[in-house]
Image 1: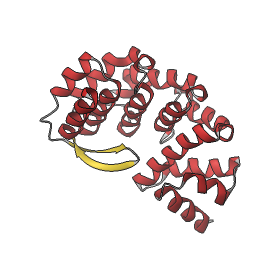
Image 2: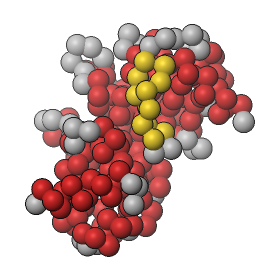
Image 3: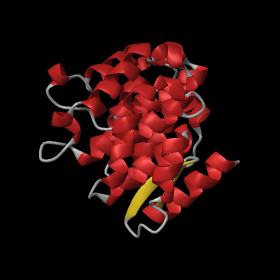
Image 4: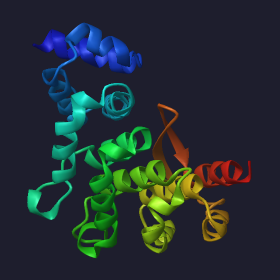
Length: 220
């Protein structure tokens, strides 16, 4: 079992997404194994698993339809505890196949609107950062999907946590808008440091660097 799990991890690290199905089979047992890796201690493995779900959404949506329902459920208040990686997966799946997660978009938006879930002292910062990333993926190229929460998203550029400010900046760079540009310009000297997953790479960056790159992206 450990050997199989390690083989799966190695394929994800190498971004060999089609080979995952070839090696482990195109069935739901493989998808369940993938979901368990959203809880991996190694951050890159968790994020590559998110990318794998996006690939499946585009190439084999039939395999993940039921799993999508579980991911969405784990973001609901009634679930009791929020599944790690759930918002990121919903965002990545939606970026690749919005039809699979129409309801999930509403759940992600509700999460960020609720001060009980996204403001201190009760918030889970890791989940909030995942929601901000998901909004960037969902709204990138189609900002109307997330327009409803733009005022809340803008407010997170002033958050005391660098990880939150950085991810808010990245998300705004994906979505755009006049207000986004002004907020990003205000972060170009922010020395806070965070991790950012972009283009399937995980790197440590300053908030300032993220903001400058976001502005450059919007100006292209």
